[in-house]
Length: 182
Image (cartoon, rainbow, N blue to C red; front, top):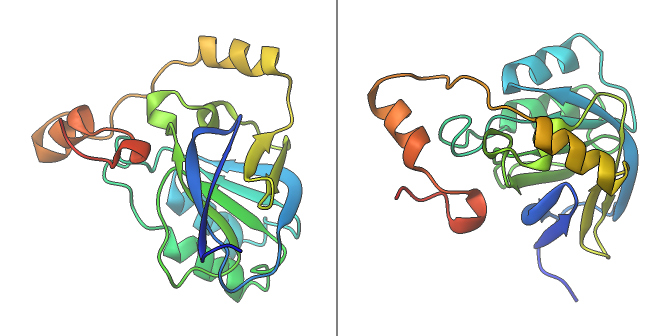
């Protein structure tokens, strides 16, 4: 009744995100957010044993604009599997993942953090819920609180101020629009 990929939407991914469902059985996951603004920081947390079963690893500012370039999160997903957490932890990112990814992983979360999407205002410890059958990805805070946080969000300084990567970050569209330059 479903293919190997599904699109989820919800208050954490209003424009959608991609989840690979082939190869795992978990259709629901609810757990506390562990928030990282760079892939490298998430990788170090896994290596130091700071990620626990049931956690939801959130890697943001790795999307088309924030990366820039939407890096692949294979290092973190491989580290989770190597730490024995591949079947008990979920991951979501505005970056991307490959077909080699194992476990419950949502990529291409849109709008991305660098565009002020809801992923930008998630805080450590807040409950995030994946529901594959309902096609939902949500953070369990009130709509009012989410709106308040989004209204107060300010963009981080760009990672690149000059050169081709700076130009790309200024011109690239959302992952939900194909991450093409305009």
